[in-house]
Structures are given as structure tokens and as C-alpha cells.
Amino acid sequence: MTTEKKVARRKLSLLELASELGNVSKACRIIGYSRQQFYEIRRNYQLHGAAGLVDCLPGPKGPHPNRVPEEVAKAVLEHSLAYPTHGCLRVAEELTLRGLQVSSGGVRGVWSRHNLLSRHERLLRLEQAVSREKIELKPEQIRLLERFSPEFRERHIETKGVGELVAVDTFMVGHLKGVGRVYLQSVIDCHSRHAWGRLYTSKLPLTAVHVLNEDVLPFFEQHEVPVKTILSDNGREFCGRPDRHPYELFLQLEDIEHRTTRVRRPQSNGFVERLHRTLLDEHFRIKGRLKWYESVEEMQKDLDEYLLVYNTKRPHQGRGMNGRTPLQAFMEGLGQKDKTTSRAAKKTA
Image 1 (tube, rainbow, N blue to C red):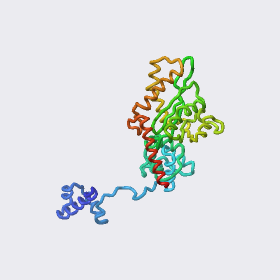
Image 2 (cartoon, rainbow, N blue to C red):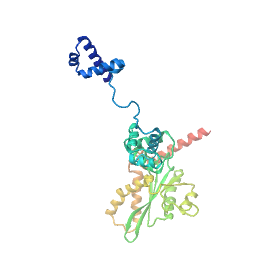
Image 3 (spheres, rainbow, N blue to C red):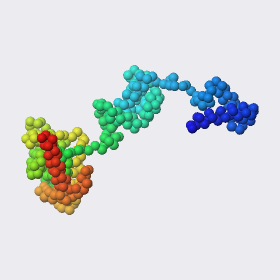
Image 4 (tube, one colour):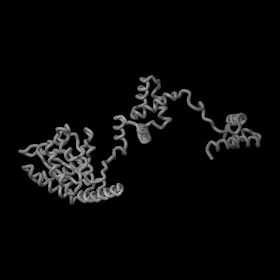
């Protein structure tokens, strides 16, 4: 039984007790009502019956007469969907410029009726609208979703097999006395995390081509696996005119697709960026304090020894690796690729 029904039954008991006793004052003292309340209850009961015993809140019934019109409320909701971080005053001013008169309080009232008072609730509404409808997001909406939504923040690169996506990047290791700047051309297979690296005194398209031609492609050819796609940033050593740039021409000759990341977005190439941090923490920062290097060749020799340990003996804690070494993941990826190829051949047959 609800509270309203309990109160209505108590009022009905008051009327019945007053009729039995024939004394209004005594019935009011027993039930706990005043005489004024008794006469109001009796009048409501005589006019409206049992429905008159239910408490009715004061105020207008139905929508408030000062509520904003439906077309204005619809415009507020549409604007809040397009710009979920705008406050009520900003929304009111924007709608005024469009010829719709509404106060900031009216905007807040619309938000309150639709549970959109907080910025988080309006951003969640945007996510739900995107999941239901195929709409084109504006750059500001994409930026806000990536900032506030864990689902957008935790996106990962997915690869089905080795060689499907290989990430490359140029990393400045430091300065070598008498030599100058030392750059690392790093390459990593995004499926197995198998890594390659060569040190140079300059970052040019020729050095980026050299590490692919000497180390990476021979390794894949040895295992009879093609490299399908190269992922790089927009550096000059990787990008240029397709008919003139050495790196672009080399990829065309090898029939490799070239993809680039978003400008000023290193997260898009997170595999190779994480490799750089590992190389710094586990190799360069330690060796730089244990040994005095006089040439790039000495640094390259120690780097090759570390990469051998990294690829064959060091358990990898990356996503999906489960403690396997990159070489183990590479060989298992070859087996998965062979199974996928055989299934495709059977379906074709």
C-alpha cells in the first residue's frame, strides 16, 4: 500500500469515527487532526468522493504555463547534442542569435526534464546518439569523446597476422662526441612485436629504406611472409611526392601500402613509440652510463645484442602477448596465417 492510500484511509477513519461518536473534537483528538482539517476533509469527501481524500499538491496541473514552447525545447536539445559542453547561458545566447527567445533558466528547465543537467550526462547522450544513428561527427565532438569516453580512449590497433602491419619511426638517441646526433630507425611488427633497429648519423629517406631493405624485408622473405602495410608518421624521411620520394618509390616497388598517422598524434603509432621507451629504459640509458662510445658502430653492436635478447628471450607484457617472446608470437602468427589461407582455399574450391 502506498503512502497516499494510507493517508486516504486515515482520513476516512476520521470521518467514520466522528459519525460513530457524534463528537468531532473527540474524534480529531484520537486520530490526530485539527477541527479545521476535519471540515476540509469532509467537504472534499462530499464534493469528490473517495478521490477527494487523496492529497493533491498545490500548483497548476499539467505543464507549467511559463514552460518554454516545444519548438524552443527541441532547439535546445538539438544544440546540446551538437555542443554538449556549452552551458545554459551560452545555449540561450546562441539560440537568441537564431531568433529563438529563451532564458538560461528555461534552458536549464529543459535539461532538467530530460536528465541533462550535467556535462557528463550530455556527453553520454551524444555517445548514445552516435551508437544509434550514423551521423557525421564534428571535429570538436570527436575531440571531446576521445577525452571523456573510456571506449574511445582505449582503442587499439588490431592485426590478424604477421606482416599485415609494420610500424616504423625515427628516434633521436642523443649526441655522440666527435660524431654528432645519432638517430635510430626503428621497425616493429604490430602483430608479434618483433623489432629491428639501425643507428645512423642522419635521418634521410635513404636510411629509412636501408633498414627495410637490409634487415626487415629479408627476415620476412626468409619466412615466406609478405609485408602488406607500413605505418609511419608524416616525417620527411617517410613522406613526399610518390613519383620522386625514395621511400615512397621503394614501397611501390615492393608492393607495400603506405599509411600515415594523424599530424601531432603519436598515439596513432603507439607500438613503435612504446618500443622507443623500452629501448631507452632497458638499453640506452644503462649502456650510456656503463660504456664510453666513440663510434656509431660500437653502439650498433650493443643494440644488435639487445635486440636479439628482446626478440628471443625477453617475455613481452604487451597487449595480447601473454608473456611470449616476439619470436614465439611471430612463429605462432605464421601458423595462424597458414590455417587462414587453407580455409580460404577450401571455401574457394
